View 1 (cartoon, rainbow, N blue to C red):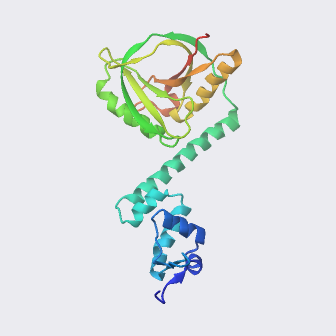
View 2 (cartoon, rainbow, N blue to C red):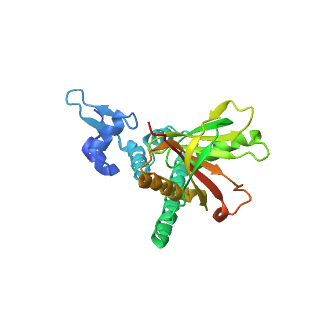
View 3 (cartoon, rainbow, N blue to C red):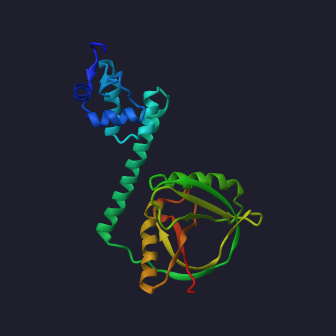
Length: 251
């Protein structure tokens, strides 16, 4: 064993990490010990490994995912920028949530006027993107961008979102077209008009779901968002979106 090796306890103190964390990073292949005593299994590190260990600790303190940390350590270009973009997206989501909370604190939960409408089935083109609660806006925009070339005069874009948006899920956007290769089902829907920014649509969705509870109906996903005007030319406070949730027929 080389004399310049540090036992795991001393190396952990040097790097402001715990021995448990170092063992975990070794198991993940992020930071292997310089030498392991074959008799005791005790781990030893070189002082020069402290820089990598400190970087791992710093990135983890900023909630950078371990796969991204591994890419940074391997010298992959763009890994840090990707981690920064992820943090920026999370900050933007938090700010949207704060604005929404401020509105609820100031005005209370809005009263949502809900009506029951019957929709026919329509031929549509569909675009899909995988999303998480923090990437819904980006996924929806990507779907819209792919569908715009297929959008004819008077055509409406319809976003489809699951009732439960935990974990990872599919975002779908459709546009009506007589040559569409998919079918958007019809039926009875509870509908309400949302006026305002897209990031406040959740208030109207909750209002429609409250209607289901009040009248004893069963909601069936997905939630439909029918975008009635162009966000490129309409101020956010004047955007109109029709929120629709299928009313499950009684058996």
